[in-house]
Length: 284
Ligand SMILES: [Zn+2]
Image 1: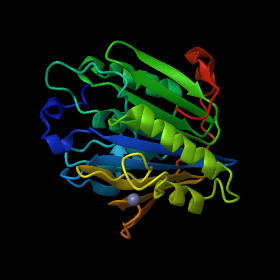
Image 2: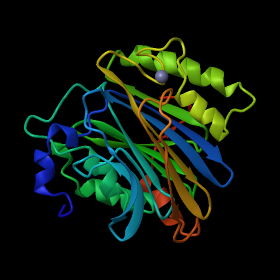
Image 3: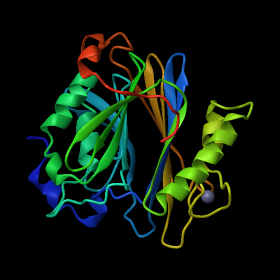
Image 4: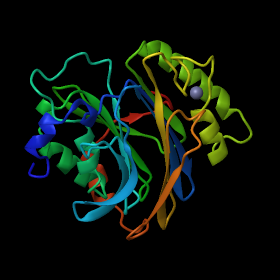
C-alpha cells in the first residue's frame, strides 16, 4: 500500500508499537459510546505526542502518536474508532524487520464502514506485521469488530454492542486477564457503572494490589504510560489523553472533532457480506 512507507520498516525502537499490556473498556451508550484505554509500556520508552487532528485518507482523524507517526488508538470524523492491542498468545514473530503495528490503526482510520476497514486491512502487507488484535467500533450501526492477525490469517469476530473489556498482557497474560476481569466485573456492580467518572476510576484502579496485575499497572521496568479516552456522540468525537500513570498523572489533553455526517452514514449494505461470528461473552 502506497501510504505504508518503506521507512516504516526501519523506525527506531521508539517508533514501534510494542505494548507490554493494555486494557480497553468499552461503554455502549444510547447515542454513541465511551471508551478508555490504558497503554502499558517499558518505562524507558520515548513519550508519545498528545492527540492531534490529522488527515486520514479522505477523512480527518484524532489520535495520539508515536515519534514515527503510528498510533495505538484513534477516532475519525465518522465517529469510527480503532484500538490495537497485542496478541501475546501467538508466539510467532515476523522473521525480518517488521512493519510497525502502529501503522495499522493510522491507516484504518480512513474507514467509515466495516467493508472499508476490511479493504484497507486486505491491502496491508500483513505478513510483515507482528500478531495483533484490532478493535473497530462503528457507532452508525452499533457494530464492534475485532480482527485477529496471527501471521497466517486475519480472522474477524463480531462482538455485541455492550459494555465490555479487552485485556492484553505480555506478562502472565492469563493471570492479568483473570485479575482484571475480576476487577471489571466487580466495578460493574457499582451504582455509577458506565459513567465517565466510573471509567476513569476503573483505569486508575489497583485491584487486587498496585502491581503487574492491576489495571493501572506498575512494575519495576514497565508501567501504564498513558490513558486515552474516546467519547463519541451523534455529532462529535472527543479524545482525552493523560500522559503518565493514571493514578499519578494530572496532565490532561482534550481535543474534539466534529463528525462530518453524524451517524447518518450507515454501512448496512456491507454487513451481511461480512459474515462474522458473534462472540457472546463480555470479556476477552
Ligand atoms: Zn497506579
